[in-house]
Image (tube, rainbow, N blue to C red; front, side, top):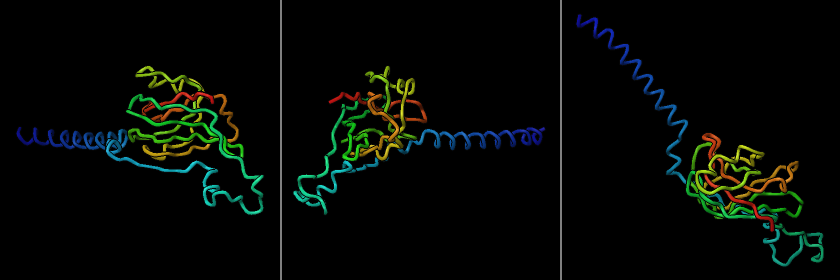
Length: 188
């Protein structure tokens, strides 16, 4: 009888071990907990300001100083508030000299996480837990993956999108459908 019991227990133990290993592997993939201890800092200059900084006071070749290129203009901005994770920094909606638009995150400081995106949305920014999940209820445009959880970075608004239709920006965790932090865009 002892052999029968051992023969029955062995497949059950092996099966349980396989299920446990698969479960741990899936949990690690899904939650990516190591990102909580990994920071990625990105420092990008605002597009359209680098060329002018190369030679202060000098117009680009072939142009007179009277026809110097237009500078970027801030159309709206706001302070990031924390939602699911502590988040701080500022957000600006900027029209560049060529008429295109970028969302600029400045002095961003948030947690790293899986599948973080920068969204331009029409949702109101709400404090606390009430604001964690509102941004996918209405219209939103994903401007791409978050480049880094710290620093200053730019996100191009697609040319066919009217940025005036949107009034907030969120750092959105697409994996768990939750906002890490968000900012109301106050028009300037």
